[in-house]
Length: 572
Image (cartoon, rainbow, N blue to C red):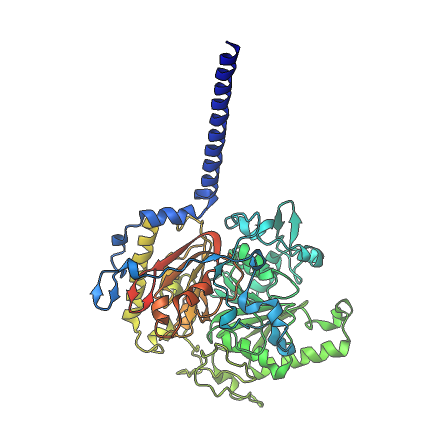
């Protein structure tokens, strides 16, 4: 009797233990699923979207196959699939073309070693960059402007090095960004308002900005209040993770430097350029760096220089630099600005502002004329050497005419016909084609939103368009909740990046055979239209293109590929 009783009791206890274990398993499974979906933002979102996608909704997209004339059929038995395995943990923050060890092999002169130096083919990784231990979903904008989970970029050096300047503070399990900078330790707002007293930021006339040597990009972060979008860049150097912090905050930024090659932006792109103690030697190399800023600055655009050597008479002791050195540096900067025919609009404290002339008619009577660049294509910049010469203004029809057309305010300029289109500068793309492209992408984006219900909810902040065309995808999805990095492949048949900037959007030139100038996990959504088809005749394998952007997408996020199969080029 006792034995039977013990056996029954054991069975009851065993059943209870099994029930508890099963219950716990179910609880943690549901908890994990919740964390990885919806507000947990897991990659289950992408999985569910893939399951539920009705390809027939996107009636204008080509999902057909064209292999050897057998349209509409794919023989899966002959398909070769390559699975990308996780990389080793030491590659968590790997930036292939700005690798610190490889950088040391290149000359330090003119920051050459901080420029792009990509690995040879036999050293390229073909694996998925893992997320760091404890990686958390970034906060939504605007909270992300001020807070970043510590685990996402676990580097504390700036909290010590820049403590008195209020760049960044470590609080518990997050970094806090008070909005300070070297030139604005008490916050960017007051500094921006000072600039806005001279530069028309509040009217929408100034929309695109370039921040050289951006730090953690607080200037660009706070300019969103003015509806100004900023392309920020800084090198990967001793200030570890500064660009990574910027992107984790939801601010546009790339790894970059003013060194020996031209900036990867078109001419006449930015309404405003800015340097706040950016440590760029503006007076060196016969003014080459100021001439490069002149190239990317729109006629009528503004250049802001904040910090040394401005107001050197008052600040030379604090800067711990010789008076004569600072005096000579500012003299040279003023001289180069005059040579460029910039008009000085403001100098107060440690900040000076110049404005580029609206056309070259104002400059023809100068006693000293600059050396003009001989290149006939000012947009041919990918890996091209920077030169100490001035990019010529395009011709105008009168002395009061603005090169590139009269400025339009944002958001009017988003859908207005850009001057490069109306003037016929882009061969083969007229006004009608431009407007049709706009209409088409509005339809596509509406279809995307039917598939992904949270596309415009603020879930996706950092978005990339790998083959941006006229920027119509970015225009259709435009919202204060997000921004789009419009990428213009350097092999694209038509270079339309200048059009994108005229619309008040930002973008960059890039070759998708190489890694993008960013840190891993920095984009929430990547959109690709025609990328593999574009490269199909370039003797480049699909996995080479794929591996070049696999590191950019965040650990839990989404990739939209506009699909077609064409010849040997595969898009999926």
